[in-house]
Every structure is written in structure tokens, then in C-alpha cells.
Image 1 (cartoon, rainbow, N blue to C red):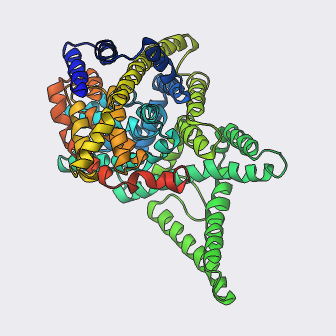
Image 2: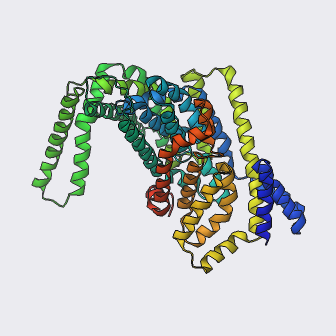
Image 3: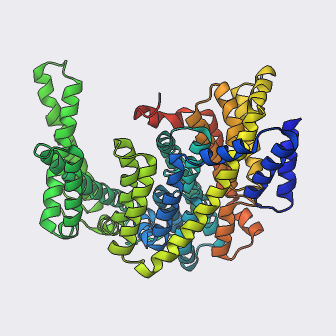
Length: 560
């Protein structure tokens, strides 16, 4: 009976058009004063103790970092990098949009911010290139939803606050599902572009798709080894001298980044790194690993392993280099698409490194997710203002004010949601729901199906933050009682929020994209359906395949 009263009050207040945060607060206070004898002092105490959690501090920091990056030119550089990588395929700019959204999602933590940052630049370019407005709107609206699945994610932080689940484990659990969903959205984009013969963005029309693809992949591969391995090697040497290993790698990394503008333009340096790391280093490393794995073999047979590996590797890179005309084995010179990928990679490197700062720092144990959020905000400020210089110091107060407004709104929702969670627990509603489901023989499969239906319906009326903070305290205890992993359950909720952001009537991404494209919500809803259906299929996959979510955090030792 009490549960019916609570939800009747909440639904009635929401139907009046009252903001959800205020509806939550009034529902709790009305029920407490009219139907219970809970003292007012305990309400005030719960109000303050509920929002003093250290993890909540991550929310304003991630919002601030996302705003600095949105206004700081990082999105434009990421779009250039993504276009150089996949632009030669059918629907090249659409595929670039999916890739750029995935990259920006890994540094922003917000879906609407991703849609604004990527869509405001890419959508006009797609229309100008001859793409239908609906196609571009569908790609960006749905791909922007990756902002809350690929870590860092503000919604994951809120789920952590509501359920006391590890934020670091949630972040790592979102990596593989995020990449899989990005691939699925890219596949839908490619298929529709191929079916309707949408244009490509080829740098060199005379080259085939396979040549351009291999060349672009090689450019990305060489950019990665050129960025990563020199500081690792130098850092290892410095760690023998300096007392701190972490400081050694930090010094080596910063020094290499300072030298990078000169090193990348010096043909002899790039050739030396290519020969030492790629031509010589890769076969040595692979040979050592294989010899270690097959150490039970006779010595005479082990001798053949390095020889075969070296010959095979040299044959492979020589064949690929000759096929694409970019990378002969020893006479090394970047050309064609590989050169363009190399160039735009170094233009966007400072934005891409934020992924390493956040995820690498959390995994390495250098700082907690909240500290990583603070680091990302400071780093984004430095990159936007002092390195890229796309944001002037006089614009900083405007960005700070915008971030403060959004943070205050979310924190107010969290405050009222904490009270709502308190009253639900006080009335034993989650426990009663769990006992009822178990008593009627409803198992994990039926429960997860019901959860998806409830969350998708809720997505029609509420935005993600409110859904997580209202439903997580109710559904989480039931999930735990049924033996569902809390991290896996969190990813299920996040994917449901993604779908909810892309369909009416209150899908945030729809409204943001509508403002950019000047399309009506009805027209935009029709445009996103092909991608939205693929997202629903992905939701089923994530729901009933826990390993997709929890394999990575378990492998990294972040959960049992």
C-alpha cells in the first residue's frame, strides 16, 4: 500500500509538469509527514550524509572537462583524424562521425556534449558533401549516446553513488561494450551508405579501398608505436637512476611530447624509430615471447623460432608496403593516406592523451576516479587555453558558469534522489519486491527482461540521471538477491539510458540534434530508427552475456 502511495504521489507531481528533482523531494516530504513518524532530524541528517560521498565530486569535474574540450577545438581535430582513418569507405563522413563520437566519448563523459561537439561541426559538412540530412542526424544522434557508455561516464558515477559499486570497475566494464556498440553503429552506417550510394571522402581517388585502408591503418600503427615506445624505453632506463618509477615514466613521457613537434618533422628520426622499433624490435619481442612459451622444445628447434619470426615479419611489412606504396622495409618514407593519418594524429594528440590520463591513471593506481576527474579538468583547461589556444582566458568564466549550472542541477537531483532512496529502504519496498519475484519463481532471465522494459518505458518520460537515481535503489537489491553481478547490472542500466536518449518524447540527444539540424522531433525520430533498432539488439546482447561487461575488469584485477 505504501509503495502505491509513493508512486502515485510521484507520478501525479510529474504529470503536472514539475521538474523531476522537485517532484522527488515533495513526494518524500509529503509521505514522511503524512504517513510516517520519521523525525525531521533524521531526514536532514540523511540529506547531508547522502551527498558527502567522495565519488560525487567526480561529476562537476567531468562536466568541466567536457565543456573545456567542447569549446577548445578538440572535437574538430578528432573529426579530421577519424576522416583520415575511415573517410575512403562508403559513407566516409558518417563513419568518421561514429569514430569521432567514440573518441570524444572517451574524454567527455556526456552524450549531449558529444552530440554538440561532433554534430555542430560534422553535420553541416555532411550536408555540404551531399549526404541527406536524415542520414547525418541519425548517425550523430545515436553515436553521441556512446558518451555515457565509453568511460569516463557521468551516468556510471551516479550509479556508483546510488549503489556503492566501484566506479573504476564500472569504467573498465564499459570499454568493451562501448567499442562493440561503436562497431555495430559503424556497420549500420556503412551498410546504408553502400545501399544508397552515399559519397566517400577519398584523399586520393586513384587508389583502391584496400590500399587506402591498409595505408591508413599503418599510419595509425606507426603513430602509436612512435608515441608509446620511446618514452617507455627511456622511462625504464631512468627508473634505474631515479627513486620513483612513476616519476621516471612521467619525465620520459613529457620530454618526448615536448620533442615530438621536432621529431615528427625530421625524416631521419622517424626512419630510425621505424627501423629500430618496427623492423627490428617487433620480431625480437615476438621471438622472446615464443621462445619462453615453447622452452620445452630442444635447443636446435628453438633456434629456428627467431629466424622464422623475423623472416615472416619482414615479408609481411614488405608486402604491405609494396601493395600500398608507403613503407618499404628499410627505405622508410610515409606517403599517401598514412602520411595524412600521421599528420592529423599529431594535431589531435593532446586531446587523445586525456584517455590515457584518465583510464591509465585509474588502472595504474595513480589516482582514484574522482582524482582522475579533477586531473582531466585541469588537463582539458591547459590543452584548450594554452596548447590549442582555441579558448581564450576571457572565455573561461563563461565555461565555468555553464559547468556550475549543470553541476548544480545534477547535484540537486542527487540530493532529492538520496531522500527517495531513503524512504524506499525505510519502507522495505526493494526487499518486498525481491521476495515477491523469488516467491513467484521469476528467475534472472525474467527479471532482466522486466528491468529492460521498465527502463525503456521510463526513458520515454525521464532523462538518464533521474532514471538511474530513482530506479537503481529499487532494482539493485533485487538484482543482488538473484545473483546478478552489480557491475554487469550497472552496464545494463547505462545501455538502457543510451537507448532512451535517442527516442521521444524526452530523448536528450534528439533535442540537441534537432537544434543543430533544424529538423522536427518526429522527422528526427524516423531518421534514427535503423540505428536505434541495432542498439536494441545490442541491449539484448549485453543483458544476457555478462562476460562482455565484466571480463576486462576481472582480467585487470579490479573485481572478484
